[in-house]
Length: 117
Image 1 (cartoon, helix red, strand yellow):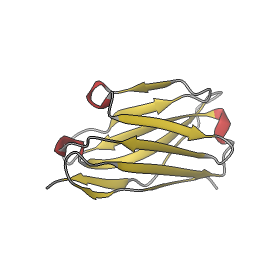
Image 2 (cartoon, rainbow, N blue to C red; image 1 turned 135 degrees about the vertical axis):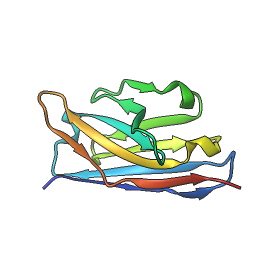
Image 3 (cartoon, rainbow, N blue to C red; image 1 turned 90 degrees about the vertical axis):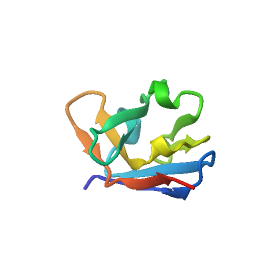
């Protein structure tokens, strides 16, 4: 059974930091590209940051220079370090993995990030 479990969300003041983690099981993580998405109330789910199976990263313009995505294939985990958080970063954050050789695609349940004073 495939599971993706996000953790690390919470309430933080503007300018603060949070580190999200995504723990996976039931897959060979090294064969999956990985992405962090977020969805604010009433808005679509958007890609925030992604890291390929080989470690190439890309970021949404809105988070470049503030967020850093990483992965540990040995531990089957990924992380999103979020610094200089802004109120507009408030959303539910989801991790997603996509199999590099096929159509398999899995989502976590999401973790709430709220940036507010």
